[in-house]
Every structure is written in structure tokens, then in C-alpha cells.
Image (cartoon, rainbow, N blue to C red; front, side, top):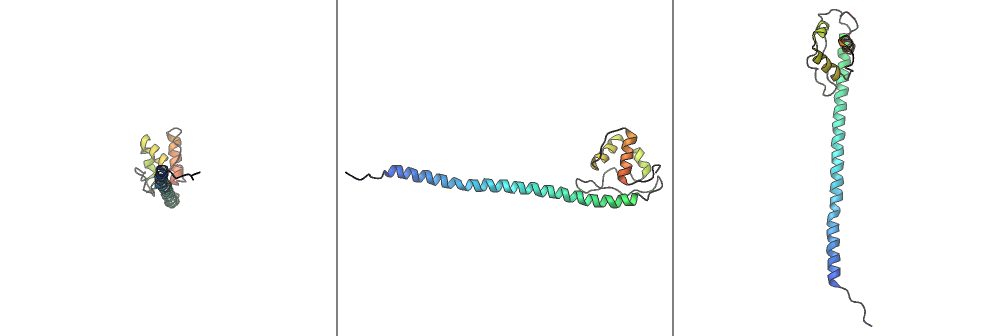
Length: 140
């Protein structure tokens, strides 16, 4: 009886298929690495937003403290900052008297940028903004 002989065509095809599969193994690492890098970028964006928010909170606390000493309607207010990017809030009222002169749209924008509710009537919204600004006197 003759010993079985190798089929070189089958062996060559198997080696070729093995080579193809081994070449694809790098794709899992690349795909996984891309997903990891994407998640790191998302985490960095969240950390940046958190950092802006913390800095804005610190600035706003100081501004609220300054505004708590305001006793006259025409006295200057310290500007609060946006939690989103720690920039001064646009259209922020210069004085307590200017709060009642804000348009409904600007009042809503300020409340939203301070992450406050925009529910209620005009007086409720103004009151909410006055508290957020740090005003202690109701008539100011």
C-alpha cells in the first residue's frame, strides 16, 4: 500500500486562505483602536464642558455675591457667564431696572443659558432671573 500523498493545490489554497485571514487580523485592532480614540474624544469633550461649567459657576458665584450688595435700581450689575462656554451672557441687564426692559425672548434666553426654567408668566421669569443674579432686594 502506498502512503497518502499531499495535495499541493489544496495546501497552497489553504495557505492562501490562512494568509488572507491573518491579514484581516489587523482590522480588528484598527477598528477597535478607532472606537477607543472616538470614545476618548467624546470624553475630552465632556471634560471640556464640565470644566467650562465649573469655571462659569465660580465666576457666577462671585458675580452673585457682588450683586447681592446692589440696593438701587440704577446700580451696575456684575455679569453672569454661560455654563456652556464660560462666556459673559449676551444681553445681560446692566442694572436691576433693565431687567423689566428685557424682551420676552431675551429673558427666556438668559434663563435657559443659566439652566433655569422658562415656565410661568413674565413676573415669575423676572423673579427667577433676579434670584439667579443674586439680587436680594425685591424692589431693586
